[in-house]
Amino acid sequence: MRLSVGKVIDDNFRLTQITNPELLNATNSTVVIYLDKETNDRLVDYYRGVKAVLRNNNNQLLLLLGAEESNITQAIVNLCLQYECYNIYKEVPGVQLTKEYCDELLQRKPTRREVEMYVNRSSVAVDSLDDMLLEIKQLCAEGRIDELREYVANNQTLIDEVPGVMAELKGLLDPTTKIRQDDLDRVNDELQKARTELDKSLKNTARLSEQLRDKEVVTSQLRQENETLQGQVKSYAEKFSTASEKAKELELDNKHLRETLDKGDSVSINFYNTIRIGTIPGCKAKAVLYFKEVGRPKYFNSFIKYLVMAMQKAVTHQGRGKSSGKVKVMIYDSRKDFSSIYSGLHVFSEENYFSEKLDAESRDTTVFMDVNPTYLADMLTSGGYEYFVIIDRLGQKNDLLDGPNVSKFFTFSSAKEYLSYIKANGKIGNPSIIPESNNTQDNTIELRRIADYQPTTDAAAFAKWFKLINPSTGNGVFDDVLTKVGLKIGR
Image 1: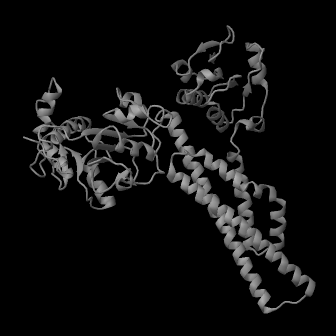
Image 2: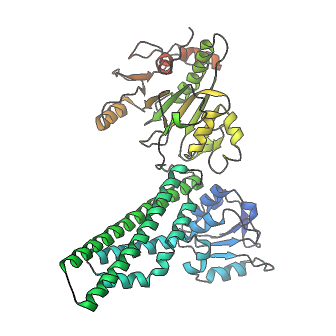
Image 3: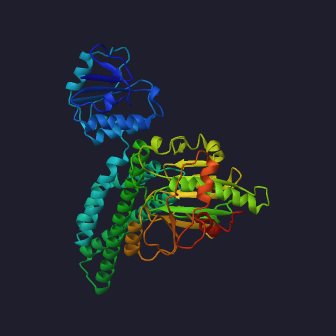
């Protein structure tokens, strides 16, 4: 079977869409994918489609780059290189695309070097830099100073490129993510400082060695000074190695983020730090309910829906009949199939957030598929919202937010999961949301099945939930949650 995407070739190829199941499930086929400005901002669709073609044992994949370049070209080319698919060519103006022309291109055996012009230099340079640092460390450890000087001289060009390589690594990261930017700046500074000190030490070592050869005078003082300098060289080489390892970690983190955004898979986001709510200028939050999901209890989505209604009623009750603040729900998730999981809700990521920021600020419920401190700060300082519900489904140990007016709850899919978590991590100081249990647990809020639950309206459903009692305290489940943030429901 022969398929083409984005460009009519001839009758031998069937034109299809990148999201068509026929393409995504094709095997033993020849596929031509054409990228031009018409594919701009369709990174997720094309990333999934190209990856499916590469994975499904298809005979050939030919990637054609149009004269009007797409803004997703770099990411798709990098994906092809990961699978050692080098059939990547730019369209030649005036040449008609036919089966014979495509077959001629596919019969070629291009190498990786032919397409490295499309690859960011840092993906190649980091490995070379790492090898150099390991060699320097070994020579220093063995005290082979003459060989060290010779090796540094032979690799001076690569050493001179270190600041440029680090600048490119820094450019790969999201410029709005201050946490990762600070880390990379620090690594860059350490590399530059270590290189300067290493050059000074090598020059001093050369000077001493020359004096020893010329004068043939070896004194105790000179031997001690030389040993000290060698120790410094070893120390700086170790700093070089440590800085290189940190740079590689940052590159892996950035690659992990790009894959998460590109394909929407359930990839763990693990490179964010907790934000203190008191450090956000202009923060308007009076109270935040923070739900940390270990597992999802039954009825949890309905619980959140009617908890927000109860929270709004409590805020109105507190204002003596007038609302004293609006309630906003923020969901952080990195799993796959957002369209089915969050049907009807608008999902934001770095692909669309900054162009649709006002929309995100005005919505009562927002879903974020990546972690950026800017999102959280914007939501807590705009839109007229003063009470917030945050659902953290990222599966990481770190919290997104903490502070004196942030009340945290854990959620578990079963009492067994709750008890296993305590056994592994120790007693939980925060209340936990669990499903109905035969054995009532302390410091938990049970979401029990509501008898005869067949409401026809939200008001009827809310009335049922409003009466639900938590067996561990004898209070209403909403009361046990809202009292943590100083709110009471008028009954």
